Image (cartoon, rainbow, N blue to C red; front, side, top):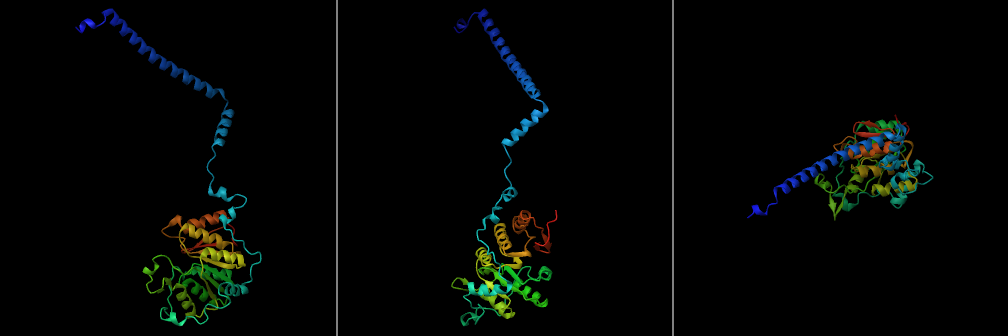
Length: 323
């Protein structure tokens, strides 16, 4: 029954021939289109002379400029105001002999914090001396103090005062009359008492500032060293506003890029012309993600030269950058 439903033989042959022709036409058309497309593209590419082709490529490249780099941003007319450090510096820097009186007046209500120190209720909590630092006795301190002969030194990041007291000894040896301001919030860092359990805490207040002051008293340096117990950012901006400048500034606080970058930018504004700014931790496991990155970027943006002295970086503004 199924055989009877098939079309006649001559019709089957006709259908097969039609299908073959259709396939052949389809393949042939594809080849023809491909050849025509190749010829057209070749003709278009050769129809423009080389100079015109270069001009077209330049126009295309101008339509998609590369993203701006940090240094392109830095070359804007405002120089980004040291990345938006908003405090206005005094136009009249204080003479060195007025630096300590200004701090005593503005921070301690005109009275030395060492007067009647330590108070009776704290004496049992403080050690006679408790000194600890990192890189605090390096040769860099004497090298730079001999070079600059500073009247004022500002230390950003103090902890227990090891490097500050070392600088006191160096200035005494060189018969210099140097005043040292130690800017630190004297709070340490979260968990620091796991390593310094002997630094006591009363009602959540760690006695880091008081132990620092006790160390200063022990070394008879109260006439040379003053603590400024505030955050680094607010302290440096106030120094700038009050006209307090320094011949030598040490940066040794936060070791991450953001902290170091902020400290360096703010501190540089209160550095006397020809002064030196320097700091610790240039060579650490953080490599180019922490202090070193901040120092390198700052030096590049301000056309300054970086020197190293063991683990310390040094920027001497009296030296031109070597290209």
